[in-house]
Image (cartoon, rainbow, N blue to C red; front, side):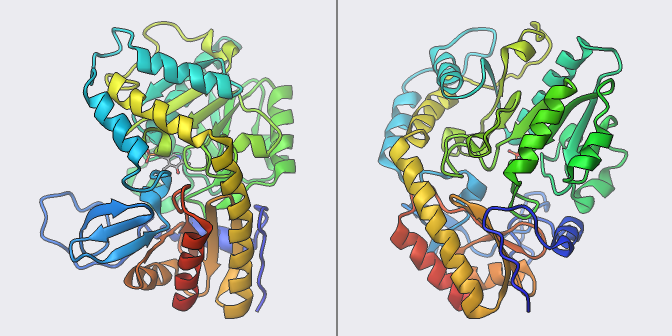
Length: 418
Ligand SMILES: Cc1ncc(COP(=O)(O)O)c(C=O)c1O
C-alpha cells in the first residue's frame, strides 16, 4: 500500500481527485440516519439524535452524551460553545438595534468594514448573509469592473474540485456533478478548469475573462492546500491579463490556517476576497472585500441586500473578528496545526488505514480506506464529530480554541475508529 501524504501540497493521487469530485456523496455530514418524521424538507441527511447544548469543544445530545466536535458547525464555530465573551457580545448587541435596513448607516457595520480593511489588502467591504451570497456578489462586482474594460469581458473561471456555493452562479462554479446535474442548465459564462497553470493559461482569454475564483485551501473538494507556487503563477497570470483574482476564504479564512487570512500563507494578494462561516459566531453573515479599483466601478443600485451587515450581526462579527485576529490565537492554531498534521501522519503509518493526509492549521482531510461515511459514522458512535469532504475524505475542522489536549483526545478516538 502506498501512503501518499502531502501535508501542505494540493498535489495528490489524481484518482482521489477524480473520485472525490465525481462521487457526489452528498452532504458534508454523511451519517446514515433513519428517515425521521419531520415537517422539514428532506434535503439533508442528518445524524441520529438531537443536540441540545454545547460546552467548550463539546456538543451534548438530549441523552447527555458528549461529542468532541471536530466539525464546528462546518468551520463556523471557531470559538466553540458557550464562549463567555461571545455570550456577553450577544447580550449587549440585543440591547441595541437589530435591524434598520441598508437605507441607513449604523456604526457596527462601519466599524467591521474598517477593521477588515485595516487588516487586509482591501479598501472596501460589502456585507451579506452567507457564503454563496458572498461569492454571487463577488461575481457581480467582478463583472461590473470587467465591463469597464470591454463589452465581452464577462467569464468567471473556477478550478477543478471547487466548491463555491449552491445558488445559480455559484453552483456553476462548483465542481460536484451530483450537485449540478439535477439543476441544469446552469448559469452561463462560468467554467471549470483543471488546477494546472497551462490549462488556466489557455482558458483565460484577456478579452473575455473577468475573473478567476479559487479556494486557497479547497474545503468540500477534499481539503486540498493549493501549491503556493501554483497560486503565485495564477496571480501573475491574472495580473498580466487584467483579470480579477477572487479568493474564496469562506471556509479557510479568518484564522483557520493559522493566519487571519489564508492568502497570507501564499505570499500573494487577491483582488476580491469572500468570507462567511465563522465571521459572526454562528449568525448568518458573509463579506466581500475588494480593492479600490473594483469598488470604484460599483454605483448605488448595482447590488444590495435587506439584511446584510445589520447592526446586530455586525456587532457580533466585530467581537468575533477581534478574537480571531489575536496573534496569540493564530500562533497557537499554527503550532498546534503543524503538530496535528504530524500526528495524523503517524496514525496513517500505525494503522495503514489512511492513504493521504492534507491540510494546515485547524483544517485537515484524510483519505481513508473504504468510505469517509463509514469512518464518520463510527466516530460519531465513539463521541467524535467529523464530516466528509467527498466520498473518501474525512474532514477535521475543530474549533480554533481547541487545546492540544483536546486535539489529542480527538486523534486517539479517531485512531481507535480507524
Ligand atoms: C469555500 C466555500 N465557499 C462557499 C460556501 C458556501 O457557503 P454557504 O453555505 O454559507 O452558502 C462554502 C460552504 O461550505 C464553502 O466552503
